[in-house]
Length: 176
Length: 432
Ligand SMILES: Cc1cc2nc3c(=O)[nH]c(=O)nc-3n(C[C@H](O)[C@H](O)[C@H](O)COP(=O)(O)O)c2cc1C
Ligand code: SF4
Ligand code: FES
Image 1 (cartoon, each protein chain N blue to C red):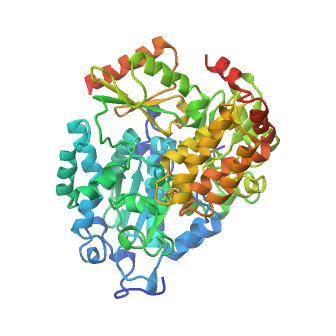
Image 2: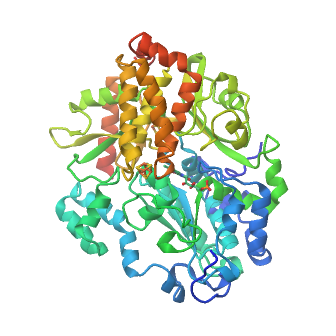
Image 3: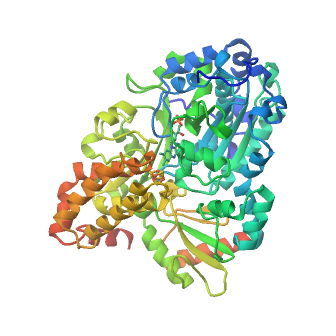
């Protein structure tokens, strides 16, 4: 803090935010700004292609001025980025503490039974992937799942309720 | 009581619009503050207010602001305000509720904090799972830009500031402030060594202040009504402000409410209809996964930083998780440890390899293979990994273990003597 680099300048009034011409010199260069977008770029590639295949890694690398290796460091890091096929719609079932205290294990068992797949698997018709996820930040609605961009909960764990949930997810995807 | 952070609510339960926020008094003090208050006065009032960070660590906010280079210490280049909306601590959902209810409180707080620290730009780092919430914020930012509350020369003052949203990919460690900065920059989100602290070298190696959503939303009230007013909001003498409290797990009516900081757990639990199904309370984790268990004897402790520390735990995020007499605290702790092991960023060995070993040990207890030796190993392991790890993730994982051993040792020993979980049958009955 006691070693300021460069000339002392005017107060905050001198700044002009994102577009700030001269200030940019000390801020991110163009390359850094491209790199900042990597998660968004991977997300849209995943939306188009279903998951992030090797080709998508290369495309993202070109888009963000990174090496494919640098992209893979990101692509393999995040819970919502998929490096393998996981069905047309992913059902992310929260298995963290508040959901568990409200029956998440039962819910996951039932989902698994109705879909006929285990956690981490895709249904035979490729429609759904059933994946575990940590706390979705909707703990007052436990137990809950994220499907598409919607959090569903609190959910009942009996067979009929889970079948109805799957139907809601299908309907929503149909209308999206 | 009057709500401050949630003072405006949208019709039909949606986010409050700019007009609705204004009708509740929002942005009223902003133009005058930007014109008449000096940045150092803004820092002084936040210091005097006693505001402490709501992201988990409780660091005094005014002090944090004073670390940012200003005046002669500043080189004139960009300085950034970073709002931490990663919110992935299990049991925590308060920032989501704030963003869903009253997004302009966050925006106004960011403008004022930005002015106080002379920030040139603000960002909101939000977990991707908050799709609608990020859209809502985006909309609110547009409204604010349209009303000249963001952008060049805000509200006719000399201050210019804008806010941009960064949607992340969902990973707990991104909430740690230096990992967040790496994540933001598009790097693998492992934490950075400190020092240098973000206040001098943060985002893109520029001075940066990282704040929790709720902390920032406290700022407009402080600037408008003053430090004494803010202190006076608290329920306990050493406290300051209101708090978004959440309750989940075995409660009848889980939800998030804004109450004076220092409200007791008993009052909060009552308000949420008590323990689910009229059962007895076994214990709570008071502030998200990385805080230590408390028991019914702590029901009258004020839910505030210092009192909870005295009681052997922490306020953390202020969102408690309740366990009923039917819920096994060992099984619950195993769940938490699975979370911490899974979300370890993998950068340092004690955490990456130690946490899975902890999971394995707890699994032995739950499955009836546990021995007395396992109990000792668990205690030793978690005592050692926290201090030997690179960031606070592993130390956070050790907190619930501490509480488990302090308050529930007889239950731990029963897992050994009874060769399994004594709660197993009760759990069957509850969720059948
Ligand atoms: C593993 C880990 C995860 C964290 N997650 C969050 C989070 O999701 N949100 C948050 O505000 N702070 C989180 N923090 C705390 C931040 O590092 C930082 O202290 C906080 O954002 C500062 O804001 P405040 O001063 O307003 O509390 C986390 C810390 C650690 C060690
Ligand atoms: S303590 Fe855990 S989360 Fe933190 S740097 Fe080490 S491995 Fe990563
Ligand atoms: S524990 Fe499931 S949403 Fe928080």
